[in-house]
Length: 464
Image (cartoon, helix red, strand yellow):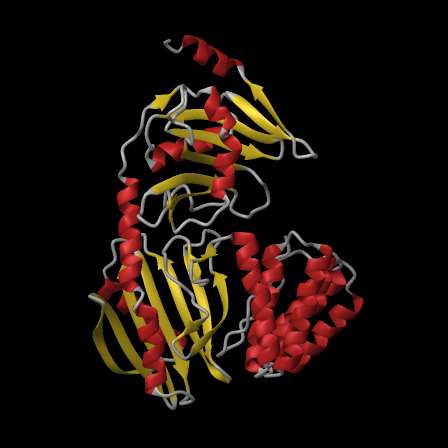
């Protein structure tokens, strides 16, 4: 994996030397010299050294690091249009020659997006923002569209709608690989500034809202050069407290709004130089935090689901085997709501995601475990038995699907607890569960049903 350089700070350049060992020592020498010049404030010499490195670079790491560093230098020189083009060249280089290196690709796109924004190039800013959005949907799969078509963060149940009051969403990005720290960017229509950031972050400590607010104020104090706090109060949004602070430094104002619900913080930060009115700013905040009651209701519902007791196992029957395809076909249809299972442990890494699909009444339709990145068709589903009234039909059946077919792995007399399902899903992924039978579909669409010995034995031992 390529390792990218740090972005330029707005105040004080802190470019780092390429962390990846250069294939060509001469390229590495030019880049090291460029970084030293940049850190000394001589950006012209830094650019010249980097251009010399690019001219002789042959390998992918050398070429990428050269383009990425030069893009940072041009950005620091306020030559934003050039910086954007260079960053996109770096991104295209990775996409063409190292398509699996999503980290380098995303870093280059984010630099290009920022540079286009600073250059007031709205069309290209939205275009690159769309590419970043597609990366979120395709690679991390931590957002899905709710029934209104707005992206919903799968863990916190918070939304990043297309419009937030008068503001328009530009893109969404995950700030960590687990999806527990997410940022949504907005702008005011055709106004290139200010930049509006919404953050959804899982809080693992026992921090209170006031403690989180104080910590965020300290971050603003450091990041914006000790601005003066001109107001601080607590708002009420549907019965939920929202801490608000307004900070000023010269003509620049920064607004902070922060709430805490079910272990998730919802934060809005907006910085502007008078391009927008207080009414427009308040409309954005009101639109965002009006969602708090809905978030609370959703997470309360999901927390109650997690307390469901374990269920007893049942013996699968032939009718369960016949219903396997129908169970997976039903899962392809959008449910009214979802609850993710097993946070923070099961869903916090690079492994599969587990969730429950709910109907309009909040009843569980099924549990699902699937790969996080969508790279495989593999899934484990525990769904309602469609023929439980027939002899041998179970109330809920457990099945897996991969490229080879669908496999019956077990049955239950009632809906299991989420943790019980997770345990079975993990065992299924590790090949530790016995298959009672399978349904394989050939290229012509014809199904071939195979009955396993375990199913035959369970049927023979069933009472008359």
